[in-house]
Length: 117
Image (cartoon, rainbow, N blue to C red; front, side):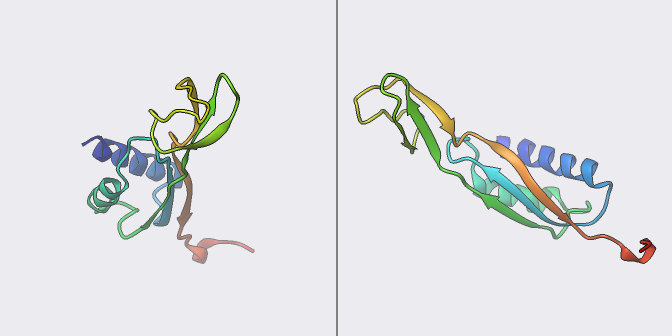
């Protein structure tokens, strides 16, 4: 289950970049063609965040669709699978979207007691 190592990497990156502040929300973008199971990431997120600054954080996952471009005719179209072909009959299709896996943003709880105005 590679979703566990992916989720561990996400948590590690968020902790490193937030300086240990309490994290409220993590928004991920996991493309439909990424090969990553969102339900598994959700399950792993709850387990991996226990005892970290992300413990109790909400995980929001955006799931962009796959898109392809036909190399011979130039048409761009939705891809449900990397094996889909173009309407022109060509299987020479470049994947242009849907394989991404990235952290879109993170909401952090800030301690305002020590802030100067």
